[in-house]
Every structure is written in C-alpha cells, then in structure tokens.
Length: 398
Image 1 (tube, rainbow, N blue to C red):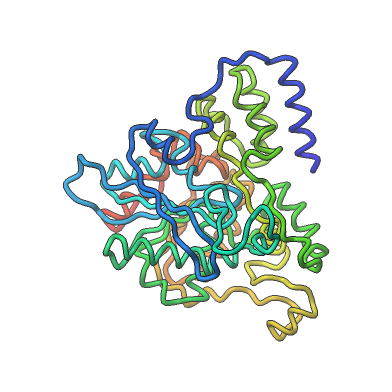
Image 2 (cartoon, rainbow, N blue to C red):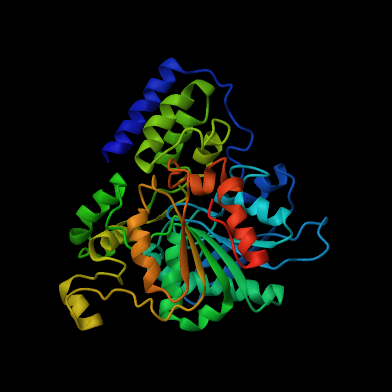
C-alpha cells in the first residue's frame, strides 16, 4: 500500500506545482467503441454468457473495407487488472489491434469477468452480491476463454483463430489447453507477449507483496470476494489526475508510476501516457489479486485452498503444478531483459514444458512489461513477428 500512498502524495504535489490543464488527451477517457471511432475504425459490440453465468463484453474490429478478403481471425486477450482497451491505446499505426486490422485480419477483443466491460451476470449483482467476485484466473481460463473462443469461431464460421495475449492472457490459454486439451485444435498459433507462468525471478514489487500475504489470505474464504482496482476508483483517478492533466506532470509521473515495471520513458510517450491512465486499472477480484501471489510462491500451479481443503480436493497438501506436456498448439513467446514481471529466466523455464514453443528475446534491453502493449515501438518489434509468422510461417526476432 506504500505505493498507493506515494501516488496520492504525488497528486498533491501535482496540484500545487503543475496546475496547468493543457496536457489532457481527447482519447483519455473514451471507452472501446468511442476510442476506435475517434481513431477512424468501426467496431461491433457482442456479449457472451459463460457456463457459470458471467456476461462478458466482446468487441470486434471487422475486416477493413479496403481489404479484398479476411486473412483470418485474431483474438487479442488483455492482461491482469486491464481490459481490451490495451490493444487500442497507443493509437493508429502503433496499437496491436489497429495494425492487425490494417493488415486485413478480423480482430476480436474479449474482456474477462469483473473488469470494466464485464461486470454483468445472469443472476448476481456485482454491486450487491459478493459471490460475483468469487473468481480468479482459473475461472477466467476454464469458463471465460472457451466461451469467447467458441462464440468467435461460430460467428466467423472458422475452425481456428490466432491468439495474441499479454501477461495473464497468456496464462489463461496455457491453463485452458492443459485442462481442456480439445482447445489445442482451435488455436492456429499463440503469441505470448511478456508471458506469465513461473514467476520465480519476477522483480515486480507488487507481486512480492502479493506473495507475502497470499498464504494467510488464502484461508479466509469469503473475505476475498471483493472488487479491487476498479476503473474510476481511487487508484485510477489518482493516476489520471497525476499523469493525465498537464504536460509538466509527465516526468514526475513516468518516474514514479512506471519505474517499478521496468519503464522506458522513450517507449510510453507523453502523448500515450494520459490515455493509459484513463483506462487502467480496469478491475478484478481480490481473490485474483492474491492468486498471483500464490503462483509466485507455488509455481504455475492450481489454486491453493490451504492444507486441509487441498487434501480434500487434490489428495495432497499442496496444489499440483499445471500439466503442460499435452499442449500441442504452437506458441511464440516474446520477452525482454528489462521486464520486471515476466523475467526471461522464467519464460525459459516454461518453453521446454510445451510441445511446440519458441522464445524471442527482444534486442532492445529497455523494453518493459507495459511497453508490450503501450510502447511506441510495437510496430517495430512485436507486430512484425505476429504478421510474419501468420503469413509465412516464420519470423526474425528483432
């Protein structure tokens, strides 16, 4: 929580010394459809209901009118605490989803349960029913992801899609294809941007805190059924106030807010930073927050219910590690030496556990965890790998 207090303090400093509202971006607070429209792209909004009743917001950027035909379906899955907005935020010519759409792909963008676009359920009210927030990445993987994959394939009359994901979004497909191997055949290829599975070497300070409190909180049950890091909450409003209102605030904000994530000030530019803080964080459950502390403590393993319940559910005192050897779909992982969350050493531990996986470590050693979705060099380092593999079956690691 010290990080949050520091952020609030900086907001006060910002008010005193930087009260000059000429840095506001017109893209800062626009939701997905409005942001895409502002940038000149048409969209569709869909809703998908999961097997356990969650109603997920799903967006589509259809194949552009300038294209003769669709080159196939690309699904972009956002990371932890975030939303589908991530693939639009850097803007035309730079953002993942715009680049894929410009290259004649049919782009679909899901949102996991509990985030800004998926706070709906067939019977539960997220503002009144704590049971709504009883989920973690496990439920997102086993219920949310197959629901949106099946929906998109049915809507497009395709048998496979390509999957581009950041951070937790990578973990979700790994878990799904481990627990439900039939989904391997539905994925043409997965591109894992800053993939998170094992987190033994992660330097992210928030994750360190999560790992310290996870053992105690895992035993408290309903206490974890809470919403945290919601959009328009204290953290987002503080960050937006600090980073999104003046050009003068950029140096202060960039140093304090992004340094712990391996921030490179030349990647997340002063034009993009106000848009980032207008869309992040986007909400999740406290249970999912703690879940990632479990994963750092236990490895890439199933949910830890505590010793007694683990014995009942798993027949052992500790949760088993996910079995990844049956994952047959191809993976291309992209990592960076400066990623404070997904350390390259941990990605290298993941790769040999899969049947068909390769790792590209970027030559730019300053690329940070958030640069994979917000950086100005996305079209120089990341999207060329995706497009080259899809069109030629190979790529050159930049």
